[in-house]
Length: 470
Image 1 (spheres, rainbow, N blue to C red):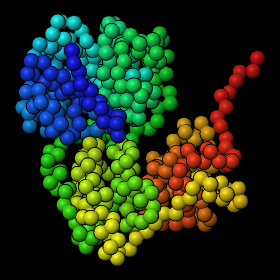
Image 2 (image 1 turned 180 degrees about the vertical axis):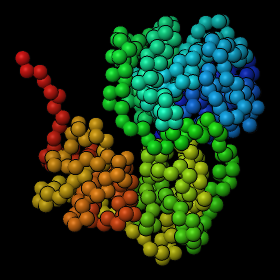
Image 3 (image 1 turned 135 degrees about the vertical axis):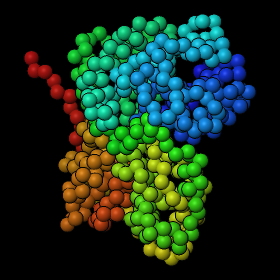
Image 4 (image 1 turned 90 degrees about the horizontal axis):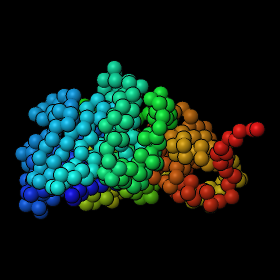
């Protein structure tokens, strides 16, 4: 049985495509659906079903556009209540796809409608399971997201359901089955996901902490320990997936408006739109439109947009490298930011050539940082995650994780110079652009981040695992 995993690394997302005897199915598609249609056309196949494992939080699914363009039936698992036409399946219901069969296994826990799909080949043999966010490679889905949409669905309650689903529905299945999860390492939907994107169920029973022998209370403790606050856009994406959303074609038509520097400036002044610069950090630092925020396409673009832009309905004006406009709009739409209203024609160079005002961010190398640190002892602010900071950091550095910066602006000094850094310069430039936007100008950024600093003689503090004294 051939199962094609279509993996999108920037949001650590896996969709799946299978085809048999002229009929195809797509599982958990991304917002842009034409690639799935093209794939089916290449097989001379008709997309019969769009299977959803659950109402996603970290991206807006493409199921509605795919149904509209292909005529496919949208399928959800038991208890789902979509606000549009879809088939809500029963537990153990079997769907036929050419010579294949797809069996519904209701596995609540990550969400109440979470469903695993058992794939059965043309010989009647069980091949694998498409698990959504129920079971990852090395992890399981976090149970604290649904509470942000339905208050009664507490993380404790859902963790209990997940324990039962794993033990009663997943673990009794055959060890040879291939596990096909919805996400890999880097997704905020779990905490210990492997870089591998498939594995056998038998091996996961051996190595996945959540599948080991433990009581329900022990499972809950292990699952909930160390969970970070989910990104603010997650509940809004869930509601879009439940209620429905605007077609991507309409969004692209509205957003792909090329604006001259004059028209761009007028639109910014008239609408109050956010100026989003998607260029690389190094290019942004050398010159940018005042008050613009830098979140580079060459990185975790969509998740960081979701983390840093609190209002999913915020109007956005784009500054991109020429030719990257449609990519930026598409990647914004993947996480529900559908209100881009145009882009700067010719990019930043056009703005600069029009002799309009520009701003810059000071950047220093790790060698310059070493000299400055040893001679001036500046305030150092590390915007990496707490776990990264705890593992190793510059002595006396202050940790303000990037996703918490808006709540901790008062901690950035205004009366003396300071230095900011992250791991490699991507996140710290997002922070730098926000600080510039809010009026700070007394800082520099370390271009190589902690990766560069770690090779210098700057004193560092490493985490030491506590030992038990006998």
